[in-house]
Image (cartoon, rainbow, N blue to C red):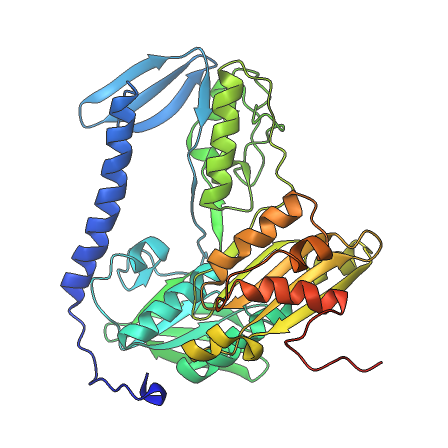
Length: 403
């Protein structure tokens, strides 16, 4: 805010109060779910469940082991953070995303292994709290799988904030010494080693299907721990369903919620199926990165003919007022039908903005539909309509294109 004429003194962070606030929000949300379940006469049992056969599970908790029979079942066992074989065992300085959210302390130097969404979200948080953060990513860009141009503004900002970003680099070993963790890695700059106070391992997640003894029920289990299902969320057994992370990527909460509703409706006798054309992805970093539908990478791989339209936020009044003109909105249209098939947004509140693009794709909207829809001014949502106008050649917010 200094460039806006508003100055602040350096903030002080009370880590215990911050953690308590975070815990209170989580408790409020989870407590709300318990209350909603109670009001719908849902019985909640806590414990470790394993299948005994196709119609019963054993549940183990502090009170012992009990057997529960069922007519139908929905498996929603989620996933757990991925692990690396060379990590020190039982060292509290080596954490995953769950441990990172415990926020017990602010390390002076933090190593983040994995430059995907989770790794960058945690890197953003800890950098803001005062840690010197190094991110190591095996691939040649951050957030592999997303279009490179979409990630570029985030990478540029992080390169100034983080201590170091190492791409095309592999971590080969982490030694646990009394005074520090020593990470060994190989990359374009050759072999090196550095000392860190904490190492956050963010190398993806693994489905929990192999923790449930599903084979005892005759449920098909893939080698990676996922459970195959059809469009009605049924496993190979018609009366047992599975949803969420346990059926595979993308491992996103909003995808799981949609699948859960489908499974519950089918189990209740409704003839429905999952028919979601697109599922949005969001990195809650600063700036946020969000995309939905086809990416340029996928279009090239599938040999799909598309046309790209980009509206830079430097031409957005709202972005300028926020001092965050580093973002942009990108729309991808099918070359023949002119319908929207993909979108990417990088910038403040990109995760909120991407919903309009997701709806437009689901509804089969074309460039004209989006462009002539009146968007409120001044807002960041205008950039979606403006990007459609760029595609149609009707925008007045940018200089005329060369003929």
